[in-house]
Image (cartoon, rainbow, N blue to C red):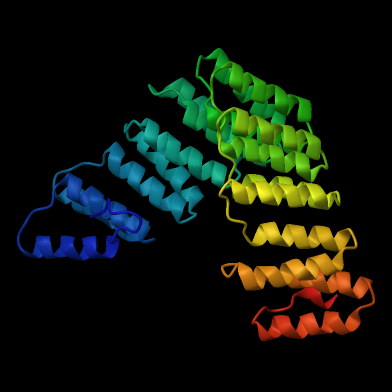
Length: 351
């Protein structure tokens, strides 16, 4: 029952467990562990801890499985400090954490942005644990360091991995490529992509999307287009995020003919445009002083693409463009219409 996807009925499992006990069935360590996991997943880690006493009464001392369950419950409940204290305590009691236990702790520390403590845990793991850090742990740490804009340390861990013959995977490379792009280190990012390909690690669409988005964000649309062409050459199918990133790049530069051509390619490729697609196009038309085209597209989205509903961004973009062209009557008309449609104006709209 706990393995039913996507929404396991944890409350039902807890109720079922109580019925079983009332019927006289004695729980074992596995059923107690499952129940503890249910409580943790329900956000009641306090109830999960109470089961430790029950385990002891049943003659089952704490083991690494129940410890990992409780650690995961604490971390999921954003109780990081108690999780760190629990790990220290169980190590002193002689319970050896497993690779899964360490992975749980790294996930919690990195999610909290506590990179220094995560790095210390990495070194302690190397010194004291029979389990050595694997590619998942290194990738988790590298991702967290990149998000904390500590790229030199992330690259240091990446080199360390290769020295220790821990092979980086697509997640490791993608994370570093994103970090390099965010700091404008384009050549290094392209170098990592080449290294991936040389090592026969196939970049996934997320890797390519990261590069395309970052290049477009910086106005390097030609380079982004080259990456897009490479995805097709490598047999990776672009998705709506790929097209939206590239299309937005053209719109930001006012290259609306290229944006329109790309929209045609997108539709021919079987990708359904979404709100982001049309908001980018409407914004592009407005910025390139083609407000009437923006209005036509706005009407087309409402009439012919029924699954797309104009949002506050769509309306605010149009209102801004109309005001700049002194077409205040039409701007006020759009303003009243958005309220009639249940779209709440924000500070940008009023400004």
